[in-house]
Length: 259
Ligand code: PGA
Image (tube, rainbow, N blue to C red; front, top):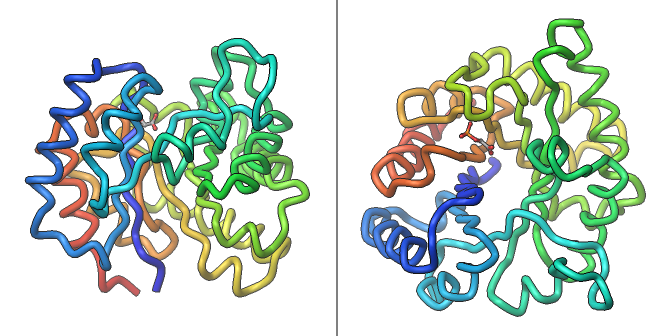
């Protein structure tokens, strides 16, 4: 059975002090949870990573960045390398979030370069894919997701693929309050798993964890997580408060024992 993974994407919110406060609250509210049952990851802004890593030192909650660059060092003003993320305590990084694609010129090609660099440095990449509202309305969802997955995973070996997490985030559901129904989401998750099966075979496809993202909240977590191909959530807004993020982790645990 795949271990569920719940990640909180804090986006461009929270000062260092606020980040430290939130993670301290999470340590407290999740203290009854068995780390062996679920992976929980938080992704603060760059400026908070180091301070949060100190608070999480030795704790099972893992640290993620929200983006990464594809070179290990060099004259790349403003960028942060995968080695530097490892150095300040990250074990994961989100790559290719739709906001980066929309506002910062991220493409499947840059996502692929970042993904391979992250793997090389020993980070677990959370790679985001998903269609826009217009693409869904045009009936292009599967075509778009197929293209994104293939291009983002180009030249990734089967061994490395075992460290990759894919987040399916329909762009129309992010920050809008509109969640895909569990069935709508699962349909795309199953499609992604089948594509990974065709590219990498049964073992990699069976163990691949695919998160859903887009207006995940305590009320809809269990229904989503009960779907056979949904293995976790990438949570934006509802990850900014300890009580709602904790309720989402609990919802995921309650859905376990599925299929
Ligand atoms: P949301 O964001 O939960 O606020 O919709 C999800 C995301 O952007 O990862």
